Amino acid sequence: MSTSEDVKAEELRFEILNARHDLSRFDCSKDDEMGLNEFIHEEALQFQKENLGITYLFFHNNNVVGFATLAMSQIEIKQTKIKLPFETEIRDNPAAMIGRLATDNNYRGRHIGLNISLWCVSKAKQLSSEIGCRLIIILTNDKKSSFYKNCGFETVPKYERKAKKWMYLPIP
Image (cartoon, rainbow, N blue to C red; front, side, top):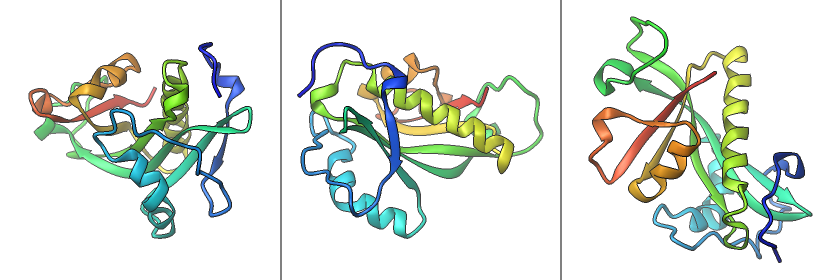
């Protein structure tokens, strides 16, 4: 069980999800409007087998405390009116996408989600030098958008008034 102390990034380790992982005690169902609990328990392995994204499990003291699923995507710059720190004539820009990100209910409020988000940004930065990638994007809802704003993401202007929001962060 968890305590209320923040978990530092260096206290986390990650592994790519595989069939041998025991997720029976992992539960992220609290305020789960995006279906993340169902995804990790019923869909993530198949999603990975079909090469639609890779799910990374994050561990603290050998407990699964969170996960993130990353995939490649793209986003249309002009239509979405994204404010980028660089000039481009390219219409569709390659992006790493956080397809899913969740923290176990018992570990919420301990900076696990923030650390996973920052890890995803770091992974996207690594990918940008290996395969080309300018942005990291995520589809979220109104309730969770403030969390991603705190992580440095901005809402795509076209989606500011919508319930589901595309958010982006230029890769540093």
